[in-house]
Image 1: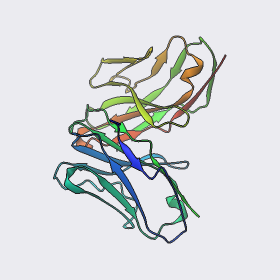
Image 2: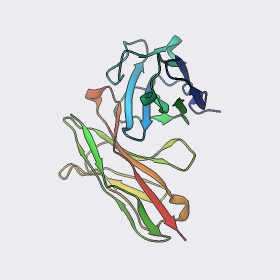
Image 3: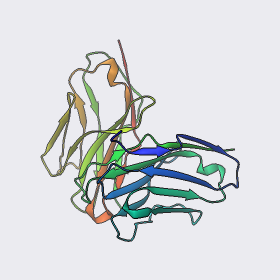
Amino acid sequence: GAGVSQSPSNKVTEKGKDVELRCDPISGHTALYWYRQSLGQGLEFLIYFQGNSAPDKSGLPSDRFSAERTGGSVSTLTIQRTQQEDSAVYLCASSLVRGADQPQHFGDGTRLSIL
Amino acid sequence: GNSVTQMEGPVTLSEEAFLTINCTYTATGYPSLFWYVQYPGEGLQLLLKATKADDKGSNKGFEATYRKETTSFHLEKGSVQVSDSAVYFCALSDSGGYNKLIFGAGTRLAVHP
């Protein structure tokens, strides 16, 4: 399809394991964002990529979280040594260009459950 | 810092009733404002946007006007349908913040026949 694609759609893992979440943005979109949606915290910004510029990592909650974007397209969010409070829906969004007026298009998310 | 405050839900209405969901914001710059909607079992979708003061965004019968003087962006619809049942999120994007979206807590709307 033409939308933002995220995988897996669901992930269940044990506390302490590492997980990788993948996002494939809309073709041609230069800006990519990761957000987290959890019951207690609502929707929170995590990290932002724009082209080849250094990412804005200001929303990452701890150094267990990291993300990369290869070739300006696909992005991977990695959570190391997962904790139960990491359980949430992780959302990826992309927009055509950088700009405060540009709408962001969201994927369906990855529901992460830490046992 | 920038923030968005939405009226708490859930909001329960009968079909064809008038809807208002209040949203106010705090921002240091001149943000763009958005309403996103999340239907049951689906992802976030852009509903409408406004990028400067006095702009009115509209889509699917929903409207919201960017009011700089009251720092508000209230969502309205004249006649809701059962299919409008969803969670609605107000959000702002500020170019000073790398355009990341700052969301309100969300308002759940339930429309009954």
